[in-house]
Amino acid sequence: HKDLTGISELAPWQILYLLDEAEQWVTLNRQPTKHVDALAGLTIINAFFENSTRTLLSFEIAGKRLGADVVNMHAAQSSVKKGETLIDTATTLNAMRADAIVIRHASSGAVRLIADKVDCPVLNAGDGRHEHPTQALLDALTMRQWLRGRGLEEFNGLKVAICGDILHSRVARSNMLLLSALGAEVRVCAPPALMPAAIERMRVTPFLNFDEAIDGVDVVMMLRLQNERMSGPFIPSAREYRHLYGLTLERLARAAPHALVMHPGPMNRGVEIDSNVADMIERSAITRQVEMGVAIRMACLDVLTRRARRVDGWALS
Ligand code: CP
Image 1: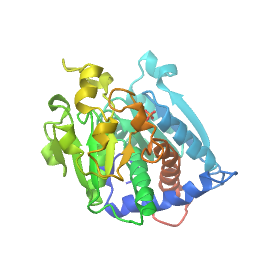
Image 2 (image 1 turned 90 degrees about the vertical axis):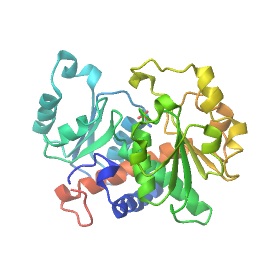
Image 3 (image 1 turned 45 degrees about the vertical axis):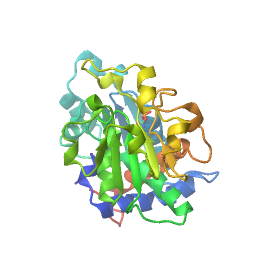
Image 4 (image 1 turned 60 degrees about the vertical axis):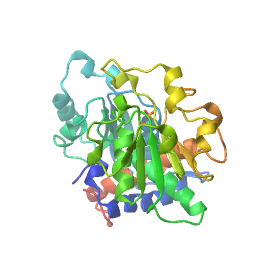
């Protein structure tokens, strides 16, 4: 397949390959000169139909550090606002002969729809509740580097608790798929109204009680309440939610003593995570996740454009 639309399409070795490829870009990004010409002459379009800070900027930085020409399309300033359909937008982008298109969209499946209409590789930057594959990859890279720092290599048996709005979260879905594919023991925790009905189809253990879910885990991944995707009557108050499902210092003490704290951002401080947990220098990986995001997106852009560049090595496309 030419695209990266979901973790569900990747075999475990392909996930590990992308993590391995990203390592070189972590190193490059820490140098004073963070630039190579690998993608020189290529054009990348970032088409974002939904807001973003981390994903949009890190894809833009990733493309530029690899030497590509990067242009951003914000839906709010585009002809989508005049009623242009998604398919017509895709056809328009295709006619511009981009070499890769990165898409974020509020509808699950919209990225696949566009990918099937364009010739170049399409990368999913988050589609509705479906998937956010580069987020799961950057989370995995963050975890793997942390494991290596502790003299460990493997995801096998790693206990990870993903807590929060599982129902609406594409980050949760991509992480569940990736971590279970690599052999981690994945627990998910949410209030009953925010737990997917079909959770038993995923290779994870569901919990409704947060204290039980984080008992002894190695990694606690907190998620934000996605109020913008809630259509039913259930929108808990921030106070209520923090009381039952917020990661406080007291709650974190139930996890393993070495446990790593993660959050994809944006955070709602004082709701799903307290500031004194999010800002713990020795335990919180939240800013490291952002750093790994640039390296992962460089790896994905590099690998997906290899066929067009006639570069040797495994290419997704
Ligand atoms: N984690 C994430 O996708 O953040 P943005 O919405 O800011 O891109």
